[in-house]
Image (cartoon, rainbow, N blue to C red; front, side, top):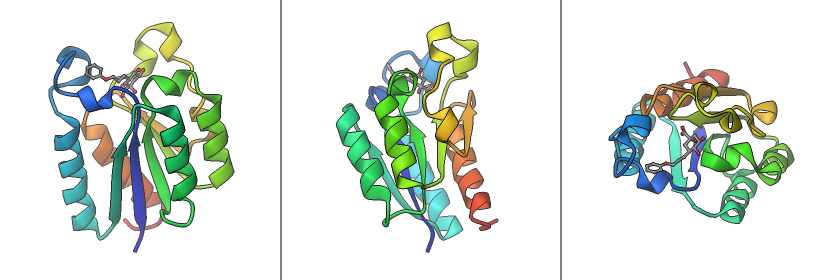
Length: 146
Ligand code: CA2
């Protein structure tokens, strides 16, 4: 069975509690539940994690090798700063879809830079919580599951 890791970075645990005009009013628990339902319908195994710590995210990327077939990664603000996460993605050689709720290209210029984009299969941004569903579809299509 195809297995996907959805990994969420710093502050995404706060979704739905503040800045709804930017990130929407859906909580991360709501997103996880929708992803779990979709994965079950598609016959895909799903692991869903969030951490506020860069090293924990890097460990999760390393551990994904051999356990999961691909990763959907919303690295939050670490997207724009973390060469270490880029190196971790390169080291595991798993397909990674970079995901953002907001359209990072339409926001402040410091959010336009992504260290993940060059090592990702592709990037989905700007579709709010629905982006998670789009990313699952994109990864499943990559594996020839749709
Ligand atoms: O749009 C996205 O998904 C981001 O990855 C979200 C990050 C931001 O730094 C990236 O540039 C784009 C921030 C996540 C913070 O989420 C919060 C949610 C509610 C309240 C406060 C922060």
